[in-house]
Length: 219
Image 1 (cartoon, one colour):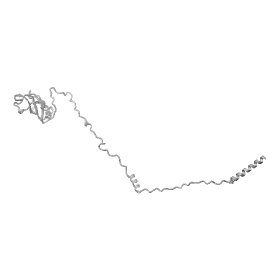
Image 2 (image 1 turned 30 degrees about the horizontal axis):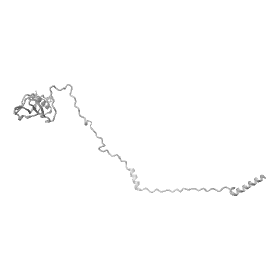
Image 3 (image 1 turned 135 degrees about the horizontal axis):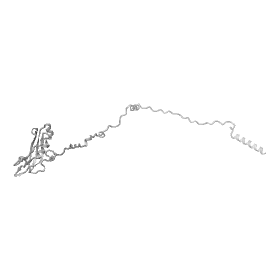
Image 4 (image 1 turned 135 degrees about the vertical axis):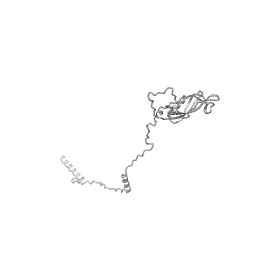
């Protein structure tokens, strides 16, 4: 009884399955798959302008120029000489060469710069009542180099005689050779005079003397 019931149930189930799926015994129809085709669209490039092509070619053909500007005058280095700010040093005197005793230091000034400065009541020799009279008037020393070279010359010296008869100031008015100037002034500064007089009293006097350097007299 139970066996018949089970068989009947199985048959009933099979019939229902066939009713529901009539293609169960056949192959299933093929599935349709949608395909997406990509349409390739070729874009046309616009033609290049001939002028632009020429410009590109010209730029390629032109050589590269130096873009650095030339230096201005301010940029150029200034060559500065080495001795521009250097004062030359005078060499020391040779060994054994010392200043002689009794030598007179003569200040080096422009002619007439300080001549007669500080001297009161200075008279010209032509305006005196009585002119000075020389007491000691030794000749100058002849420069050795000039004597050896056989050179003669002369120096005109202006000097001031004070009221005591001493020479207190000298200057060179003119000379034929500079080498004769110092010996001439040194000689005049050692001269002694009887002072000139004006109004009965001794006064300072301005005088001048031409000193000659002659090789014949020096022998």
